[in-house]
Amino acid sequence: MVDADELRDLAEEIAREAGELARRRRDEGVRIADTKSALADIVTDADREVEALIRARLRDARPGDGFLGEESGAERGSTDVTWVVDPIDGTVNYAYGIPHYAVSIAAVTGEPGPEHWRAEAGVVFTPVTGELFGGARGSGAWLAGRRLAVSEATDAGALVATGFGYDPATHAGDLERVRAVMPLARDLRRAGAASLDLAYVAAGRLDGYFERGLHPWDHAAGALLVVEAGGRVGGAPGGRPGALMTIAAGPDVYAALDAAIYH
Ligand code: LIP
Image (cartoon, rainbow, N blue to C red; front, top):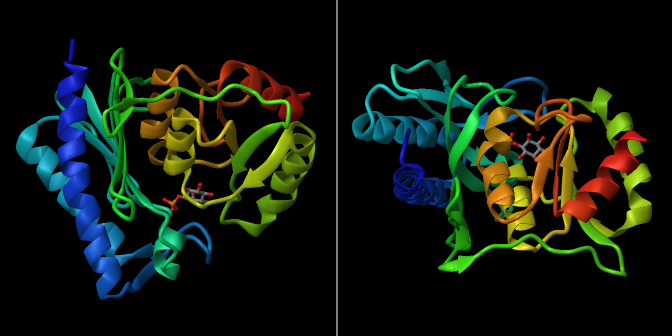
């Protein structure tokens, strides 16, 4: 058994330091280092530097844990804990200077894949506002000392966030799903950082979120926050969140989103 609260506390400490580094590098000017899966899928020098910092801090604090990071890949550990890290989620926002990005750090146990892992702790920190969303299994999700709770459906409809993949070939399908969801929505938001979309669902700032094509590091921390805030997170029908689909909301809005997307 692991102490999920301890894992959360360590993640919070490291996320704050990493987020401040990201913010400093943004102020100094950002260089695009490379593209990845598509021309629009960029990585900056700061992404790599911030992930290296997080990895070093985790290695110092918990040698032997596994690691799965967006920029440096996977390393199996000798303990049951794996850290799932997106050093700068919202990379395109970050590169353009749009102040909406976050450090996302999750600790999971068991097989280090989203279809099997057990999420233990999750932290999403955005240095722009200084907001740190943190949660641990069984201990709730919190922001600035306030316990978070997902929102309920409203007569006006649900405020729903979504996103679009980097590959233009996927946009037609993404837009079809937006068309299917619109009748239940009061409005849509597309802010560009999945971890913050999920944290906002946990905080009741969004009524729901759905997106196809996410990577494990995009949703690992935020999904735990939503569940600890009384919400539901899933994917394709009967599945867990993943590349096929991620849906997150309170129970009623979740059911409405799932029905609109899949039926
Ligand atoms: C991003 C997600 C966003 C999604 C983008 C991208 P990144 O992660 O946070 O929700 O729409 O396509 O996956 O690349 O900034 O870490």
